[in-house]
Structure formats: structure tokens, C-alpha cells
Length: 599
Image (cartoon, rainbow, N blue to C red; front, side):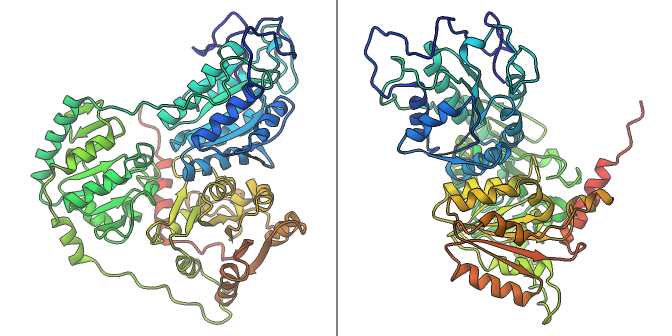
């Protein structure tokens, strides 16, 4: 976590000791302090100010006093979760809908539990404020062994772990600079769109200080400013490169979110006439009702006819891409660097060079939209080869339900009043094929791919997006990791629809490398949720095995049970998967099993 010897600096993180004279009693101050001007109140008001009005927490003895002050803030809602991992996942989901999230855990045992979720938020460029209740300020540098530690007097273990998965760390064990440390951490999270770590000594939350004003000075986050000369040069180079192309295309990547460039991407698409596609991790960031939207570009498992147009183009602009082994289908994309313009958050690279730094993606896309020549050739080619996809064959009466029929009916649920949460697994591929109506949200965690993420993320996203009904598609293996916080969904009176896809194991792992470890113990999932419900809150469950069962369940979920948390367990054959997973799994398997290079 974030402690250290009082006279040292840990990995460039200042940890300022507090005088040993500090006690639990507020020190005498020369200037009067408003009754509510305490550290805990200051932090609570800052969270409300930035939009994190729901905070996900697990209590522990080092954070209890701090939780009291968070609860005391009228505009803040403290939500207790079943475990720290889900609290972190909930803050991740909340940040996706609200723009920032927050979670609270206790020292080390809580912090090292929540850290997996924070790592996921870091990989997805989500500003999450991770707050940890730390040791009493008097214990720093005293060579004492505390509980909730690994039995050493060095309190820095948790801090050192968080340094690799957060963009800023603050160890607050001194009132003199507490306000500065807290504000710096929060503003850094917003500027960098990454998680930050704040540890607050357990005896400081209730103490006043003159720097904690009753109404904190509002944040001002300095916008990223492009170097004007570099911006002009980048636009000029791309104008020459793309305006001379015969059939250029555009592809949106996941960094459109963190750079707030979604509108600028659409503006360029409108001006250019290029067909547009999205990388799988960017689904939901670009309106799919755009007249020249092709679908998902994902190499061999792309939307039909999308890869053919993208990979046959003589020039392509990728805005905010992340190319990894999953998004590249085992490094099998048929792209050429000399044809590409890569627009990253602060950098533009044209083909094999030149590269222009200190250029923000948003500024570049907006400026290039004013210079680009309209060219619809690639989209005209797409219209010539496009053949509409057919509907999956319906199930016969009594026939076991198939996964493609399930997602045909899920498609019918989507509107601007819904959002989709897709768990790691075959839901990635089936949900990618859903056509999102304008305003329909979509989230999944592709870069980190932590199974079980969707339960907590559904909790957090639903809490932030009150105007939408969330549709979560979760595999049975993933659900077994984080099932407990269905309880918290009920406490929060949420009305999400959860499709529990029961196919007996880790299907995505089966297609990469099969083995007995991919088979899991089958649970009575509806019975489990009913036990969690225990007559408290609004909950409705159903177990479906046929298309007739599914139709009946959906009718109830969207009508008489529209105010309930609806949990629908869908029984599928263990080998019933999307064809995209079969193709993707074989290619990722080949990438994973490459022999060592000769030494």
C-alpha cells in the first residue's frame, strides 16, 4: 500500500510523516474552521463534484471513520459490496457510464483484493478513484507490525503494488498537505483517464484543517493542447496521403473514449465519405446507424464483408487503436503499415513515417475533417458485394435452444433505453453481432479480459445509467467467480436482465486449448439467486431450455416484471458456440503455441 519510513521516499512517491504529537483530538488552530471542514467531508464533496455520486465499498477497521463521513454527505450514496473485487468492478462499470468511478477498501487485505479490478480499469483507460483506509498516522516509521499486513513493519507493500496499475498514488498521513494530495490525485485521474490510489490514515478523516473549506474551490482540469505547428504538419501530411488514395476507409479504436473523440470521429466520417468500421473493443463508441457503417473489423472474425473492404483498401485511418493478440486474432490481420494512418491520443503516424507528436486525437480529427476530400469509392464497392445476412433458423417445438436463436431474441430487446454488458467468453462474439440502435450502450472488457468482471460492472453501470435497462450476458464459469453481488443489485433495487448462459464450462478456453480443467461444477443458478433474494427486494428468475420457454420469459421480463431484477438461466449444449469463436480460438491457440525462436 502506501506507507514508508518517515524519512524516506518510496519510488518517487512522497510520504510525508505526521508529528508524533498528533492525537485523535483535533489540534488547536489559530483560525476558526467551519464545522464540516474535515478531511472526510472534503473528499466526499470532491467525489460529488466530479460526478462519482455513488461509491462502492467494503468496510474494514482502517476505513470505518472515513465511511462515516462519506455517508454524511447528502449528495453521495455509499454502496456496500460483498467483496472488494466486485467493488472495483462496479467502479469500473460506473466509470464507463458516468465518466469516473470510485471505490473504498481497507488496508492491504482489501487493497490487494481490489487491485485486480483496478488493473482492468487501467488497461481500459477508465478514471477510477481507489481509496484505501490506511494505518494510524502515528504508526508510520515506528517499526511496528500491524494486522492486515504480511507481518513486516514496512507498510509499503500495498503502495508498491498499486504503482504499476495506477497513474498517481497519494499517501495521506499528514493534514498539512492532505487537501493538496487528494486534489492532485483526483485531477490526475481525470486528466490521464486512468485509476489513481489514495490512502488515508484511519485517524485523519474526522479532523479539520484550514485547507478544507466548506465549499471547495471547483476543479479546473487543463485541456490537452496540441502543438499548433505539429498539428498543421500532421494534417498536411495526411491530406496528401489520404486525398491521393483511391479507396480509403476509417476504423475507430477504443481510445476514442478516453480522448473524448467520438464526435470528432463521426464528423470526419461525414466529411470524408469513407466507410467506417470499429475494432471489437470500440463497439458502442461509434453510432451503428451511420449510413456508411460496415460493422466490426476483427480480421478473420469480422462482420461479413467488413474485413474485405478494410483489408483491400489502399489507405486506412485507424483512430485510437489497440492492437493486441486478441484484437488481431492471433496477429493475423492483413494490414500493411505503409497504407496506414495511425492516430493515437497524442500522436499521428503516417505510413512508415513521418510521426507527429504533441497532437491530440480530437484536434487532429476535427482539423482533418476540414481538409479531407470526399471519397465514397470504398463504400460503393461495399454496396456492390454486400449480401444481407439471414435470420437463424427457429427451433422446432421442444427442440433444445440454440445460442444463435437466443441472441436473435436479445436483438429484439435493444433500444435507446437499453445497454449491453458482455462477459469475457463466447458472449464477446455473439454480442459483437448485435446491431445497436442509436443510444444503446455497449460495454465489455477486451484488453484485460478478466472473467467475472461483468457482474460487478453491471452493478456499477446500472447505478450510473438510471435511464437505461441493462442486459447482461454472462457465462456460467464467469458467474461463479463473482456471483455474490447479485445481492447488492437487489439492495439497490436494480432491474437489469441477466442472461446466465449455462453450457457447462469455460467455452472460450475450450476453443483455445481443451482439457478437463475447463469443465466446472454445475450449479442450480436460479436456485442460488432465489436464495440470495431471500424475499427481500424485487427479483424474478426463470430457467429456459427451449425457444418457447425463452419467448415466455422475455415477455414477462419486459412487461409484468419490468421493475424486477430478472435472472434468466439459459441451458445450452456445451458445444453450441458462435462460428467466430471457433475461428478465433484456433488462431489464438496457434499464436500461443509458437515454438521458441532459435537462440
